[in-house]
Every structure is written in C-alpha cells, then in structure tokens.
Image (tube, rainbow, N blue to C red; front, side, top):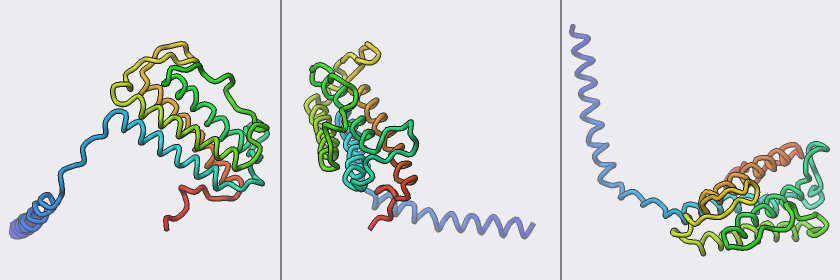
Length: 190
C-alpha cells in the first residue's frame, strides 16, 4: 500500500512539474501561421519539386548525361527533358493554349547540360507564372486533360504534374545511386 501511495505521489509531483512547463511553452509560442491560399499551396509544391530537379540538372556531371541504369530506361538527360516537356501540358492548358506538339523534346534539340538545365528551369518558371496568373479563383477553372479528354480543375491538374515530377525525381535519385553518386537532397546540409 505504501508503495502504491509513493508511486501515486511521484506521478502527481511529476505532473505538477510538467504543467508549468507546458503552460510556459504555450505562452511563448506565437499564433500558428495561417494556411496558404489555394494557389500559394500549389505554387509552393510546384516550386519545391522544381528546385530539386533543377539542382539535379545542374549537379549531375555532363559526361554522365547519357547514363541510364538499364537499356530499357531513358537517359538522365531524356528524363529531364521528359519531365520538363510534360510541364507544358499543364502550363499550356492553364493559360488556354494548345498542348505541346510532342510529349518529349528530343535530346538533339538540347545537346548540352547547360541547354537541358535551362529548359528544366524555364519549364518550372513558366508553370509557376501560370499558377500565379490564375490566382486563387483560377484554381477552380476547368481545363481539359489532353490525355484523358476529361475536364479537371486547374489546381488538381497542377497537382498531377507535381506528382509526375516527384516520380521522375525519385527515378533520378536512383540514377545517382547506380552511378555511384549521392543526390543533392541526400547530402549532409552545410
């Protein structure tokens, strides 16, 4: 009985010590940051995956741009051209323009690492500009998905391309590892 009482007293004392600390933390904490607006949320995600892919485009050695882990896969450069070309299916639709003529730009159009990296940057910058131009109200505008011939909201359409870019990012992280390298996002932060 004495042991149970001692344990109960100990737990109660610990509770009294923790309670002021918890109250102190909530007093010091500022109000939570408000949620991003619909277009701002889309833009943040678009820019974040763009930042990661641009970093890869600029980091991967030019002499390995034609590297591919297996014969059936695209080269590193072709993957970057694919994801960047695909971005224009979103950007063009959001801006009321026709879809691009072909799905993947050819590597002979963008021969150097600098040309490929510039195209990656431009595709994400153009997509970001489209998202900003649409604004919050424009996220609910309807566009026709050229692949499914189905109407979809601009915001939902954008998230599909953000996901696609994330899938390509994941594949390129494997290209890094198979080539014996560490992707920029996996390196220790300075």
